[in-house]
Length: 218
View 1 (tube, helix red, strand yellow):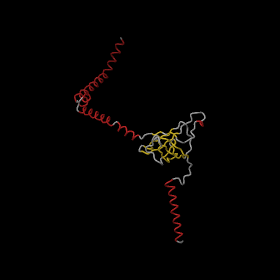
View 2 (cartoon, helix red, strand yellow; view 1 turned 30 degrees about the horizontal axis):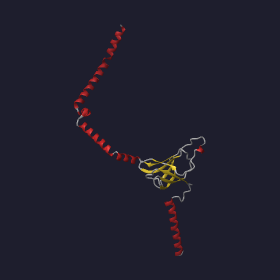
View 3 (tube, one colour; view 1 turned 180 degrees about the horizontal axis):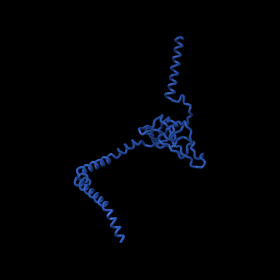
View 4 (cartoon, helix red, strand yellow; view 1 turned 60 degrees about the vertical axis):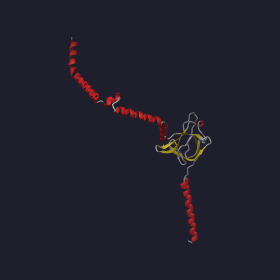
């Protein structure tokens, strides 16, 4: 084999590797034989959503996010590719929420159910500009709530600290009950006396029953 032939074989080999790498790594659909169905969804915001995130239909992997577009009214339009066919009814719901508690976003589609006798009249045939709802990240919402009420929380914590300090110093009725040994001793004594009274009542119960029975006989 001449040097020219070796050079040609090398160029063809590297070109094939580049093409294969592009479609398998970058495009990811070189060997994908699934048929895709495009759809677009409008959200008020898509915090954390990224291209490549999953689309689930009733929890089943059914598509992928292709593109995000900010509209003139500040809403966000996302373009998705669906590879599963399903019926979408007028009472459908589309949610954008966390995939796990630790993060990651996912678009979840609930196709809904037919509300009329003839389901074909209740189907949604146009998958353009579907309405979506964003479910906020719980951790972010808690952090925002804490930040918005920082002063109130600080005041509440201070009040709790003052309250516990007063209890520890024996101030107030609750503080005296907890810290006064005399009250504790009196309470223990009262419980002991009550226990003795109950025991005496049990011991005298047979005698009381006998006297009652004797009086009833006369």
